[in-house]
Length: 277
Image (cartoon, rainbow, N blue to C red; front, side, top):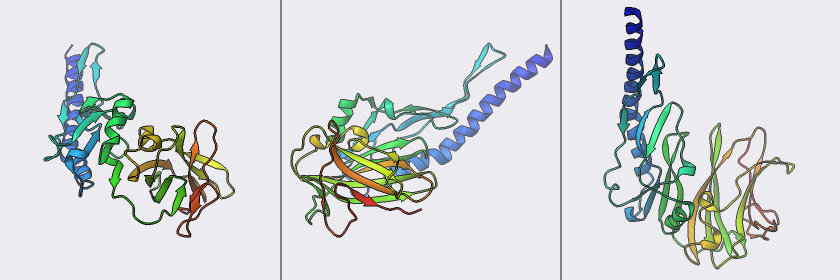
């Protein structure tokens, strides 16, 4: 009887202690990092035009337990305050398809829950859109409105201009940043392909679809001449590879032809960038 009580009390203390350790990490590391990762990307932005998706309002250790099969013990939950100056002016939203729990944690998100078409409307009118990345526990930029381009387009797919494509990579993944300008109305079937290919043209991976996680179609652009920056994430393959980027008809599969300058490397229907080995 005494031994069982000792085991029970010890189990409760263990679960709560682990929750406390995780809570201190959230308070001292995760929360400041989250706020800093958001604030650092807001330079020059109008806070009223900022949309934040899936801000982690509360975080707890994902370690609920039923000791001896009958007594539930739940570790404490810790709040993550909204960044000062943004809490009242920015728009805070939830989108379940982008939600997940980081390893060892359980997250409750802030903001009004959105359906895809509702979030698409918010994204279209935003200056910048951020979302919580469960892999790095930081806020990442999904979309940024840019000043209208005045120079000749380096990569023009009829009325769709790819102004710039940049790649950042680590050992696990690549972050591909694409700057688009749509100069006139395009058909609803128009979308983007992004393919990772071997040097002999074999498909390794792809991130096809409309910008901002399929939420902002090229046919639903904020306005003629508007320039927006979006981010796509891709795995880093083994060996040498290249990235092929273009515009195509999602129904017929037909690719749009491309006119490009000597500033970029192009095929007949795609911009090609080679991040290296």
